[in-house]
Length: 121
Image (cartoon, rainbow, N blue to C red; front, side, top):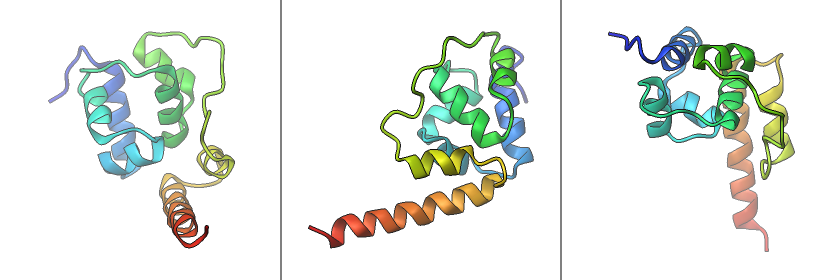
């Protein structure tokens, strides 16, 4: 059952399913909440440009494709990864990694950095 009024949400959902990612996995990889991604897929929320860019990187499609599905054009690029550690940005941007590999690397990085923060003064 698809909502024809939400071509962007349908496209994101189809790409997520093709990548064999759960809603939670895609949301984690893109750096957004599960409910927000669910609302985007159902056409209830319009994603920001930062979110569209993050979803495009994570789903390994061009951001322009997602903008086209949304019926939008891209504005001038700003710093879309502000506040994000460089290693996280690099993992998300590495086209040689599959979505599952990126997720695994991000989980390992988060585990090590969280442990490092607790164990150091």
